[in-house]
Amino acid sequence: MHALSRLSRRQLNALALASATLMAGPALAQEVVKIGYSGPLSGGAAQYGKNVLDGMQMAVAEINAASPEVAGKKVKFEIVALDDKYNPSETAINAQRLVQQHKTAAILVPHSGGIFALQTTNERSNFIVLAYSSVPQITAKGNKLTLRIPPEYTGYIEPFSKYEIERFGKKVAMVGADHDYAKAWAAAFKPGWEKLGGSVVAENPMSYNRATDFYSGVSKALADKPDVMFIGGASEPTALVVKQARELGFKGGFIIMDQAKLDEMARVLGGYAMLEGAMGVMPVIEDARPEMKAFVERFGKIYPGRTPGSEAQWNYTTIHATIKAMQLAGTTSDAAAIQAKLDAAFKSLTPAANPGEIKGVDERGGTITQVRGAAVKDGKILAIETAQ
Image 1: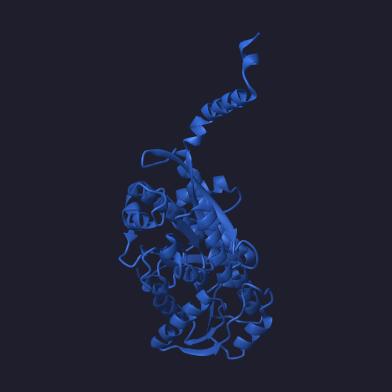
Image 2: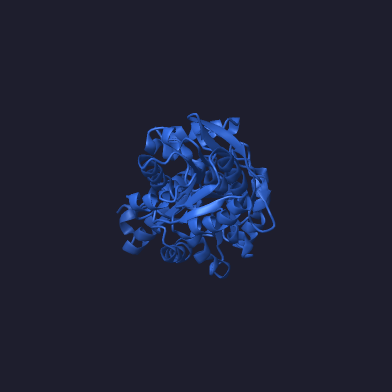
């Protein structure tokens, strides 16, 4: 009788299991490490949320292609993305799922309401909040497991206001969005504008994330004859606010808070003509630095027919730095150890991985960088220096 025929069913099953384990050895040796994302992937801010996610996914693809190791072990990184519809309560639910089910040591959130919600539990639950929001209070809270990714928006207020006052006049109508981030921006902007001798003639925040028709709100603001309009939410609805203001005859300037991007708005509006006199963040695609041009080119190869905004660029670099911090700390799970290495991680990145030139992390957990504002003049982008 053949030798195999004398083996019992139990022995055959054991042999099959051992064989499968041997064949799967190299695959099993590669640990999968997950980084969380909770942001808007549906609703009015869906494109904003997707732009953030695209930068994160681009970084992970590049890193995985280099066969990364942490503490001598091969690892593969994945982004686990959950939709929170821009709702902080949904962000909190998503974070529980990401930590408990996916063991994420870091979760990136691109809106202040969600960030504040997670800061109530993240130190206890041992995960880093990668905070993509420029609200200063994010780092003022003293949370030891938070990284604020973009520079604080307060650095934009004085140069943006000076430019608009000199070009158009001192009367501003404030018609920004009504979510937490926009409210915080507006609260800081108003005294900054008044400090320069300007006056606020109207305050009429609108629901950019839920509405598509801003006619009544814009019309009400224009009744007070402002020289400048303070606006901003996600790029697409912000562009619609501009469009309706121009259709109602407004010929003044716009101060656009940093969530909205001039180039993304221009695509909605069919060019920069309606944005004449607008002041906002320098578009990534208009940045002349060689590293930024190379980033734009790489992004276009991964996402054909598309161009990156600052959401993609900043969060691309942040994922590179987060994974580098894991490597420097020798752990993918100890959030405090990873947080402690973020400053060194940013400083060690190649220019290709850090096209926006983040110089490190300050003692409060905010990135150190220099960004530029941009004004639209004669249909072209004009760089305006901002404070660090």
